[in-house]
Length: 68
Image (cartoon, rainbow, N blue to C red; front, top):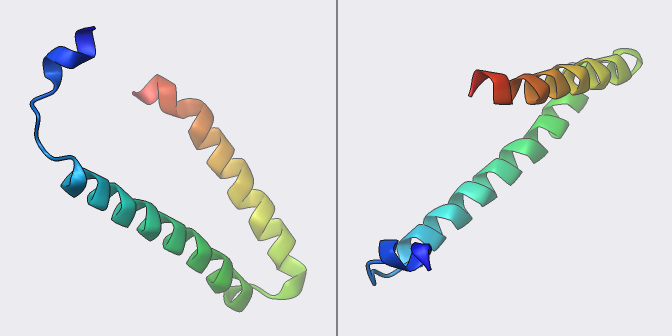
């Protein structure tokens, strides 16, 4: 078991709390984007804005492994 050689017996509670805070923060930021878009764009342009952001996000996701 290779992974056992890296375990140092330290408490994992601080790491778990940090991951929980990061996960909550990312979820909150994602939800705020939806609220801001509703206030920023008129209704007739909102679908186009969501579509453009979706395409851009998917392109970045496709290119991420090449950059890494």
